[in-house]
Image (tube, rainbow, N blue to C red; front, side, top):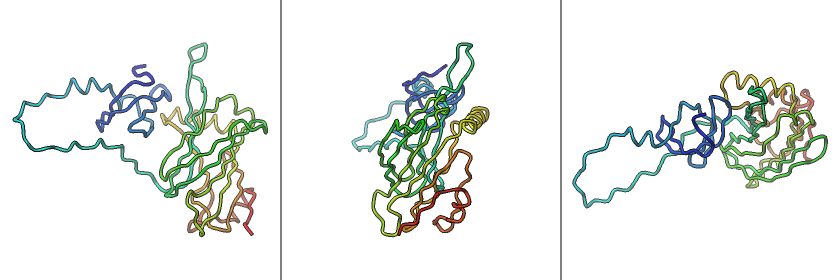
Length: 252
């Protein structure tokens, strides 16, 4: 492949400099620009020395006594819809002994597409045994890398437990919001194949669309093929949750 992990690159469309994080598939890779990681197609980036060689040298000008303040390098503009908190899977490909592409593992992220800064207590269970426990702060409209999960561990009945709370307490909002997510191997495999076939980088599931109001604390169990919650005016429709098989607990 043209690029290797750690290579310095330039984004052709914007001229911004960054570095290669890893390949996602044959055509896409993850890059880091100014601390922000996002997927791009390989033909959207190039090596910075090529850009330097192709730029025309400007004619020498007379020195001026005025001082010019250099412009700060612009970060990529991200137009993020306020559509909730998502769990995102990035399928990573590898080669088997026959040089065929196979799914190696997933990079798992939380996407905070809300204006709330959230605190997260995250735990992962395989075969009912806890194997990972971490705590994080997630800035508004930011993504957070959680962990890598190998493809074969889908057979070990994984369960992801999320316990969200607001970094700044709000008397009008719930003290916490818990979601338990259970990936289904068949569904994850189908979505992974579709993602690669359509040259996308990832697929995601909505954990919740807005942080619940006070008195509406919810403990929800979700699976990979469960439909999104029905939301009305930023609150949770408990009847829809009950129909979907959620375990709902009102704060007393």
